[in-house]
Image (cartoon, rainbow, N blue to C red; front, side, top):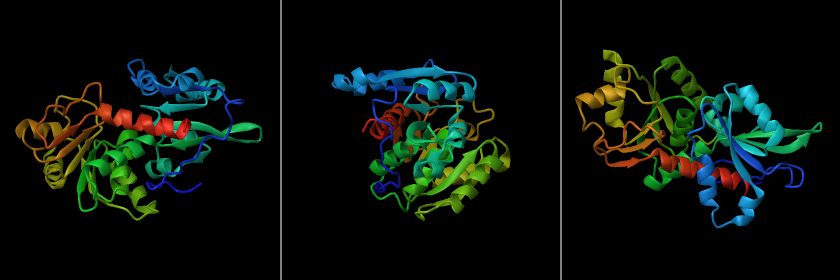
Length: 291
């Protein structure tokens, strides 16, 4: 195997089609709204050989352990969404560079056998998707700055991708200790020496937090928003936008949420919707699992 230019290893699952089920799925809670099965059918619409060999199902369980049990029994690979991305990372036997960089996984793949049992390898195709989007938007990403709002699974992937691209990056999160812990991890696990964590910023509406956030936003070229929606009463960025609707002018905005986006329609240089993120990570998933 040779390293992919992004740092991920482009390998295929170990078991053959004869000894693993050809079922793919999505773990999460809730997932009934997910577009993933439709995107899978759409992407392979002209590949009846793929659609005849693979299915893509939704696996909705409130417990990660229950969801993982279904995966281990019936599926070759599964995407993972909220709130299970960090659980998925911890549960894997083997970790791709992308998952290690993020400490979260949105793709689990059964791979080589050990002691008669399939090993599970964790990947993070959110990391690959955001990295691809950044490199398309900024052919020379180094020298640019990013602010990532949120430090859950998607936020971690976005932060790691911005750093991998060479951007100086702020992390904004409601729980500042969680953001600080992840920032320290990124500083210690940095094999490629890419990017710089400029600092962490609280996402609340206290005066000190708003002052720090305003400074970070003003310095950023790229805003990556992964927080859930809100009315601005406890969301610092939305609070600032209520006072200054032109705050994001001249900036590129990438939003993770494709169902209920909060920054769509805001004044900015360019808005990249969550559906673009979803489609890009889906292609990375298919490339990893199917080839």
